Image 1: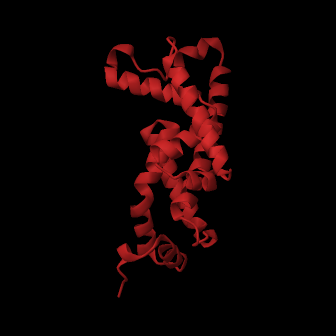
Image 2 (image 1 turned 30 degrees about the horizontal axis):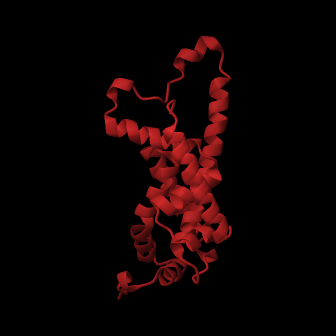
Length: 190
């Protein structure tokens, strides 16, 4: 007979999953897939890439479930894995961009532009793109704090634990990130 997994804590589900209970893995996935996807989407701004990274995050988390400390929030643990996957993705993307720019000029017409057609964007989509571009222009340490606190609604202590920094540092980066974002969005060229 199976336990009612909706009544189990994340720590209990992790223990069951570590023991090989597939239904516990499914329960953890169902419980945390949407927040992990939102977190990753805020970092990569591409739904297909975000879905791939979400899957990679859960594969990595489930492979390491024995190392999960059940005394700590599962969401913080899996969010740390997700952020690391986003950082890896960004590094790979930077390398690909470098090699794309290194192509000979005669093959430059084969390199697609990431910019959407100007006439295809509605006002709301243009504003969203503007905010995403401004977010992408922020230094990683400021962007991560803004996403964790503003998008993911993590508490200051949860964000500090996830990023392995002090709560005061989270507060400072949040203040600086908001100020920088306001500045970028106020610039006429943005």
